[in-house]
Length: 227
Image (cartoon, rainbow, N blue to C red; front, side, top):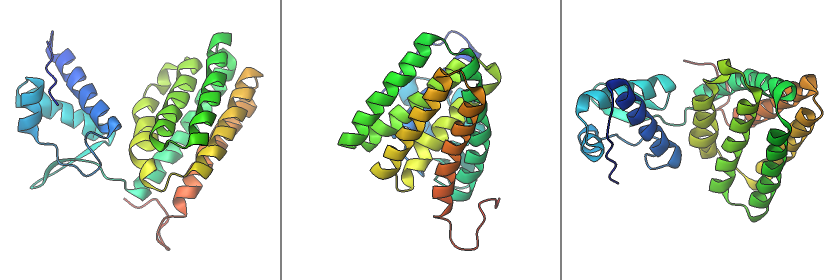
């Protein structure tokens, strides 16, 4: 895959390289555990190694890649205890997003959310895991957008890291997806009713249910909070 850009500034270069690499990880072009060959990537993007290294540091802070001496830079693998920690943060942030959406979303945004639920239901009925994963991310991003809470901007990378990159590795099933869609519908109904308390409660419960399902996959004796 070749991808060459015209860069206008050093900061723009860094941002766009980081985003291009993120999108490749999100799309599965670079799978969890894959080694990122920096010389090859730099050649594909038409850039030097210096901005590429800086972009990889950004992704390392996002938790999407790891840099270990002697083994190079790799896409992070699905570490279940760390994933559970990420879901604990998401539970709080998704709750705030739903609460603020109930207070601030426009009628057109609420209508769009309801339409997304109908589309998700069709995806589950024909069971397309990839399409469901993408629709799930879009749905949660739409709630964050409707919340109009600038402090939730950091939820974007966390949302994609948990829901699009790593969680599907742990036995995503049509049964759980069907239940999740029903939970999504209740959240949208609470947002539509302008009930922030209920919207937050349902959003938190939705994320908590996913975390609890993942927690059952931990080996006996692990609690999910190890380093």
